[in-house]
Structure formats: C-alpha cells, structure tokens
Length: 484
Image (tube, rainbow, N blue to C red):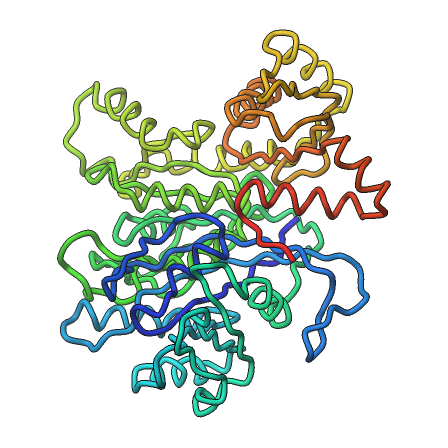
C-alpha cells in the first residue's frame, strides 16, 4: 500500500527573526542551531511534525464539532535571507526559492518589533509568487514594542498569526492554520508495485546506479554534483513483479558550491522517501563518516521505510582482500542508530551486486508486510519479561500485559500495560531488538506504541476519547507533536 506523500511546510524569512526557534518549538526538539548572530542557520533542517486536532476551525478560530483527526507534515527550516555578497550567500537565497517551489505551505516569519524592511518584502513576494498558501508569522510578540498587525498589511498576506517562539506562544494557532491548508494523508489501493528510491548526497553515484538498475540510460550522468534536478522514475520487471525506481536530486544547482562540505537540499528527496517502500542510501566508498548520510538515514527511519546502506563506487576504491571486512564495522558505528540495516558494496560500472539489490529490496518489502499472530507476540513478551523485568522509576514498576500488531508497512505494534510512562528508553530498545531477532524484521523500520491502561480507564471515567489521548501522549513523549 502506498501512502500519499506527506506535505511539506517551509519556514522562510530574513535573518534573526526567530525561524530556528520556531522550528524547534514545532518539532519539540533542538535540531537547528540557535544563536544571536544573524545567519547562523546555513543548511535546510528537516523534521516530521504530527499534530492532533479537533476538526477544522472557523474564521474566528473556533473549533468545529467534527471527529478527532491527525495531521502530519515535514517542516523545513531554511537559511536566512541575506544580500548575495558571494556565491555562498546567493545559494542561500536559492534555497529559499527552492523551498517556496516545493513546499505545500509557506510560513513567512518577520520580527514584530521591527518595521517592514525591503528584505521582508522580498521574502513575502517570493512566497506569494509561488501561488502556495502563505501564512505570516509575527514573531517576538511578547517583547516590548511589538507592532500591531496593521503594520504588515502591505505584505499582502491574509493569514496572520502572532507568536513568541522563545516562550511557545501561538504554536497551536500556527498548527491549526497549517492544517487548514495541507491535504489530509490518504492511502491508495495496493497495486503490488515495489517502489525503490535512491537517496544520497550529490555525486555519490545515484544516477549511475539508477541506470544500471533500469538497464538503460534514463538519467543524465555527469561528474557534476546536482545534475539530477527532479525525481526520475522508471518501471522495470523483476521476478514477475513491477518495480518502480526513483532517482532523487542531490544539490539544487550544479557547480554552485565547491568549497567545504557540499550543501544538500533534501526537499525533493523527502517526496521520494514518502513514495518509496524501500530506500537505498548511497555512501561514497571514498568519503565515509559524513554527518549528512546519517541525517538522511534518520529521515528514512522516521518515515517508516525499508533501508539499505549501499556503498557505491567500490570499483574506484583502492582495496585489497580485507578492505570490505575492515570498512563494514566503521560504517556500522556511524549508523548504530539503525543497526537493522543491511550493508551492500556495489559498482554501477562493473555491475557488482547490482542485481542483488533487487533481491534484497524484495525481501525487505516482504518483511514489512508480514503479520505476526498475537499468540506468538505474547509468548515472546512473557519470555522477555521473565528474562529481564522492567525496573521502572520512583517505586513505580511498569506492568506489561499484552502485545498486538496493529498495522504493517511498516510493522506497528501496540503494548498494553500500566505505569508505562516509567518504562526506560533502554528497555524499549530491548523490546524492539527482541521483536527483530525473533520475527526477522531486518531492513525495515518498526514502530511500537504504548497504551497505559490506568490512563485509559481514567479518561473513560472522565468521558474523554482514550484513543485520542493515547495519540497525544505518545507523540508528546516522542517530541514530534504539539497538541491543542
């Protein structure tokens, strides 16, 4: 089953208006670097936000009496807009333009303590020109001297939200406004097509491998970072099954940045990740230990997709008979947060292990779809608890009652019990490892939700929808949601 891709929401604005603080508030974690120096944020920072809400709101902000729903989207924090003093600063402006092109909703952030500047007008003009829904965020409204909304009418943005990202004011209003504009996530019918996305930094050999897998020249191949601008797609047959290959763009513009680590736009890659069942994360054999590779692996895992680490250009790497065995542990240490990911060494030039990629992807897809009987899950749970009972905290000992599988692609499990909020993160990791080892979920992300029976009982007594409360609690714990 292929899910409708998550929408993208981009935060744009000139420097030092609080974009990174706003991003951190919405995702609930410190992901972007926040500093007083203008222009601190250089790369796009991306994270998923899940938001529970009580139906749509009317023009006065009142909630309509509709059923409980959930919205999710990718949030992108772009670099600040500065005058293009050099190619590097010009590329930052290009990032904002790209975000406006790809995003489904654009948040234009301005400092409400400052009168409109020419830079603010440029940002608003770029956003409105995209014909996408635009929301004006008047940040720092808690400070003395904050100007009224009327001062910003000239920007031409109709939807206005006043916030203080530093103190968390107005976050619900932003999320409610975003929900009004993004499409709901929908599932399409199961077409049995295996979708494989090639993900990676610029110039790691994605297009070469794409052509080799496709068996024909589909992508433009050149030794220039960023030749691929859009997502290329081709459909092939493997063992009587349709396989759709997606080749993603690397950097936004070829040859734009030549010094230092290459800057990478993940906006179009996010769309491919959402569409894919299995992602091939390409790593250059001659350039290991790159933080961006780890960031991309985290995005793929967060999206709940299958993942294969593909070491590319193996033919060009100077090696001996022991090189592979020596390199594998080094790569494993970099990606220890996804220890379930298989590793394969390939060469699109020689064809080494190219066919094996199809075989591996098919196996991972089958594991993503497998359903485990509840009886087997609870026998395993009993063994886990008997071998290592949860310790808990504050004299509260979690009780693990039973375990069920609620979904697949990715496999999703729900653990019922009491005092589960005291369950240590290391024990949760222990549970996941036992599930993987017993039922072979190698190569795919799995999800585990926790339902506390005491909380559910209390909510029923209070007349509160316990399912909705569970979702709110789980997402708050994971730091991915800001609720009403």
